Every structure is written in C-alpha cells, then in structure tokens.
Length: 355
Image (cartoon, rainbow, N blue to C red):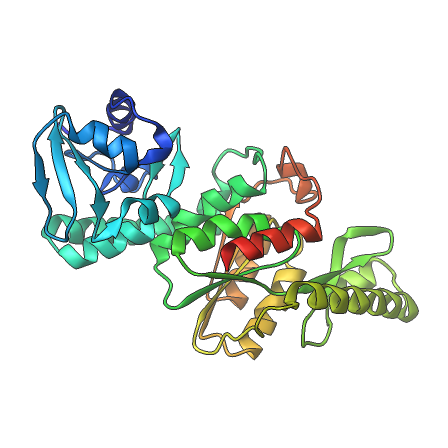
C-alpha cells in the first residue's frame, strides 16, 4: 500500500526543519495536486542548514548529476539538489500546498520525460488527463464555489495546471493591473519571462466594471454590439469611453514599458493572465493582440470566470483555464476575499523582480 498525501505531509513535518528550506520532488508534487492517488516513497530537496542537519542523520551518497543524497527512515530520501540544479533554484519555482513546498510540475514533467521509465510514462499520461479535466469549463463548473483569498492564491492555483500543459517557449503576459500578481507565480513555476500586455476594458457608463468591449496596445477597439444595444448606448457615449480608455492605455504603456525592451512574441506561446473575466471582452482583445504580434499559441488563464465565458475564450485561444468557474456570476471581485486595487508601483515592483 502506497503513501497518501496525508502520509507525505506527516513525513515532511517529521523532518523538523524549516519548511521554506525543503521542497517535495519526484512524484510527490503529482500527489499534492491530485494527479495520482499515492506514491511509494518521499523525495525531498533541502538547502543550507536544513541539508546539513538532515545529512547528519545518515550516510551521504554521491548522486549521478553532482548532487548528494541521504536515505532516512520511512522511505524518505533527501537530496542536496535535483536534476543537477541547486536546491535554491528548485525551491524558487516551488509552490505551497497545505503547508508543504512542492516542486513545480514543469520540473516534474521534465524529470519524468528524462527518465522515461514505465512508471514515468504512466505518470506523464496521468498529467495529461489531469490537465484536460482542470481546463474543461464543464468539469470546473461542477466544483463547489469557494472564494479565493487574493490574486496570489489565484496564480498559485493556475500555475501547476499551466506547468502540466508544458507550453513551448512560454511568455507570461499579465493584463495590468490586477493580472500582474496572478501572473507572478505562474512565470516562476514555468521559469519564464513575465511581461505585461496592456489592454483596457471599455466599461458601460452606468457600470464601468461590465465591459461592452476592450482595446489593446497596437490594436483597434473590439466592441460587442449586442451589449451596446442592450445597454441602449448611443454612438457618442461609446466614442467617449473609447477616447478615455485610449488615453489611459497610452499612459500605462509609457509607464510599464519605460526602460524595458519592446514586447516580442514571434514563435512563442503567449500565456495571457488576468484576475478574472466577467464578459471575456478584455481577454478576447488581448488574444487578438498576441496573435497579431506573432504568437505561435495563445493560452488564457484567469482567476475566475463564468463557465460560458471561459468556454468562449477557449474558442478564441488555443486553451483557456480558470482557477474557478462559479455560478451565478455577478462580478470578478465577489469571488475574492481581498480584491483591493493593484497600484502602478506594485506592477513595476513585480516586473523588476521578474527581470
């Protein structure tokens, strides 16, 4: 009988070293995210004093890629690094699941592809099936709605799913401002660049949070005439909103692009990230902009969206996923405990950290 996730949590905690200095690797992250039901042993990567303390508990052996490892009771194997990488690098890309740091699924997929054992091939097939379920709008809609703590939690939920998809040559594009804190954990998990794609929502004058269209950098306005008609907007009202959002878009491009190279997407997988999508207008405009800029594939990842909107985005993008797809859906903010505004300074700070 194998080890369950509860068994692994207990095993990790029994090591009695700071949780931020160890990370679960091997097949453990698949168990943590529910890809598989059990594992046979526990692989841990430790750094600094945590490694020294754990290494002192047994005989240290040389690994095949320059790392070292020690076998501990309970089927626990502790490594000083993983796949030839230092522990710090593996931990930097990891995520927190139930108080345990687990390696990015991107790392796990690469590791299992390299080994190619029968067990690894089975696990890779399980990852593909899991990713299909996690990106299916109907399947996600059946899950019980729950409120996200904040934008960072949304990103941490999306990151393993995107890592499981193993996108080729990824670039994470956050829709500022709210999409930036969501995007940061995703870029970290994929070990890829993070940039912004500036798109402005064209909101109804009576309800600015509800979009009748959107406009992106370098593109023409994308307007949903059905919503315009339903809201009984006249041409001058539409033009006034477009003009105001053009000005704001130009201001934000100037702020976010200052000192940064021009965005290039030719041949890359563009991963468009936002905190949510009530109508899909903003994300749809972003998809069009990314394709115009030469993206080979476009994925969309949002914190929350209605199932029908997510399905619609999936038809425009190559794939669309959401951390949650609750119903009834009134606004994005209703599905976050903390939906406080993200400032320009916060956006710039995240971008500087990712450089």
